[in-house]
Length: 361
Ligand SMILES: NC(=O)c1ccc[n+]([C@@H]2O[C@H](COP(=O)([O-])OP(=O)(O)OC[C@H]3O[C@@H](n4cnc5c(N)ncnc54)[C@H](O)[C@@H]3O)[C@@H](O)[C@H]2O)c1
Ligand SMILES: [Zn+2]
Ligand SMILES: [Zn+2]
Image (cartoon, helix red, strand yellow):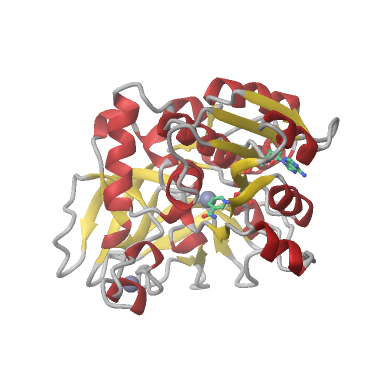
């Protein structure tokens, strides 16, 4: 029997989010219904609400979640009712051209649920990143459920489902940061600070946090930044070069995704260094760079989709590291909020007051 539960939707571009009744179908073949226990508020949810990702309103927001599998559809073998899972937006297909080449982290045909969750009048919802988890129960593809140790707790575990994984992976997987490297991270929200914490774990020796907000820079120090730069006050490129012997960092992560921050990243890396774009730009943004500089500086200009993660490999690993006290996963939780607190959490995010607000259900 389909169930009706409460969830948070963005009905139209820019309008405040609403808590409404959502109809969740029984899981079909290859699908699972998950009872959501916690879901972090990611900047990408705000991008959806602002119409920055697509026009397919109404959106069921939330995509950084953990919970317990309640029911599975026919043919599901990877998870069973009662399993504690983190939801992922990279359910690898195993068959597309990326998977066929042995690069499942780029899978071009990831799975989502086939059926749609709807409003009570039957209007189909577009779930954020194919998940939709600011809701008591959600319908996903079974492959979107990654089992982890329940001892970690849902609020912390859920963060692996997006922002923390994306930031950690941007530094460690995409940027390839390792022992003795220098890294600068521009934008120290949840994603940027996860890049900083990842760089520390990987052995980077110079970790430069750049933000326009001193509070974020204070947090960044706690996650492992060895130096901080307020780019409202000083020139980020000059400052990063100054802190790296005049050369620039081996890796620069842009965790904002604007032309000005990308430009800073481009010029603040050392020769043959790597730029990693993990912040998501809106469709209106453009950048112009001298082609000779693109050539002359060498190295790599990369984008990081979801931190180039493989959920089955990386989520349990990060849970292990967190449980061993080597990765500060729960430090990303600034506050826990109820389902009707998402709009307020967007405002706090906008004003830089939080790293992560986490909805607990
Ligand atoms: N690539 C991915 O797979 C992926 C996954 C999750 C999130 N994201 C994206 O990552 C970005 C960051 O997400 P978040 O949740 O950490 O957001 P956030 O709002 O928590 O953090 C953004 C930070 O950037 C800072 N900032 C803003 N403008 C700046 C500027 N010009 N210079 C320096 N710092 C600046 C803010 O002060 C804030 O600390 C968003 O664009 C989000 O959509 C990407
Ligand atoms: Zn694939
Ligand atoms: Zn996200």
